[in-house]
Length: 153
Image (cartoon, rainbow, N blue to C red; front, top):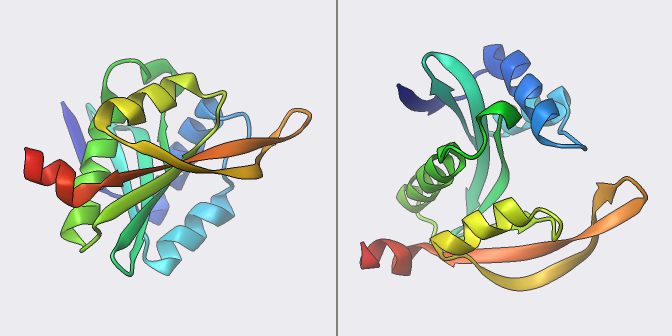
């Protein structure tokens, strides 16, 4: 059974455990606390009552930004990431956003394929955005027109 619910401070141990399996350069507890404190849209995805994924979105001025989405490494490849991104899209739209932006590493082919299969398009590059093993890696900036996406459905 899969469910998505708001993230709470009590979830941060599980969120961080997933974050550390999913990324070479994971977010810190402090960053997640700041997101909760700022009132960002923060969710966890549970599978059989266990937190296996999370997403953070900020919404303002008619736009949303998917700041973080992560599925525990052992649970990847099962459609949970798509489920969580689609949920984030719906919630961003409900909050009044017409577009959803995100960044993805050029080396993260799996995530890029997921976003592109949903309909995100590349609109730019942020140079040296992500920390990398040796220096920094650029970020591809992608956007999805939420209004057009949901009108097609």
